[in-house]
Length: 118
Ligand SMILES: [Zn+2]
Picture 1: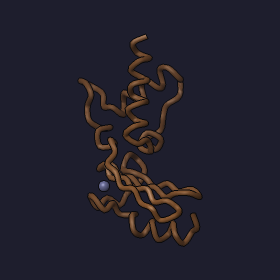
Picture 2: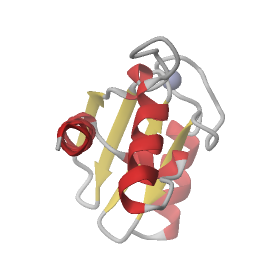
Picture 3: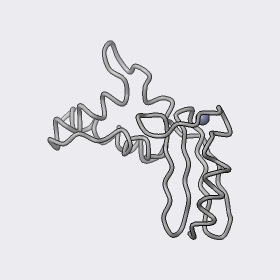
Picture 4: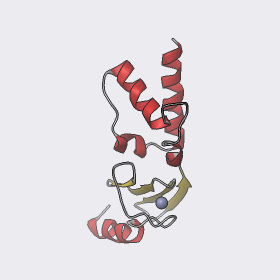
């Protein structure tokens, strides 16, 4: 995707059109682009993907669920990080976790859940 397009998309989506959040990183959301697409997501769950041909997909992600408690003392995000560290000895970054869409996130959580049961 060329720089002009990316700048336009950054201007259009830099501020979340759902909740007005302008921050990225630290669990706030993020922006990603490569030669095929531009993706902007936000902690509120808003996510838009714009393809090179101009096609846009807006979706709701599970991101807002990530920081909700799943039990007494951990959030879903904590669970993912703790489990990944336990089994792979590396910690996933917030950026990585936030970049996952709902489907990838549920696959990851199911997978980690399975590992605990073994
Ligand atoms: Zn938002």
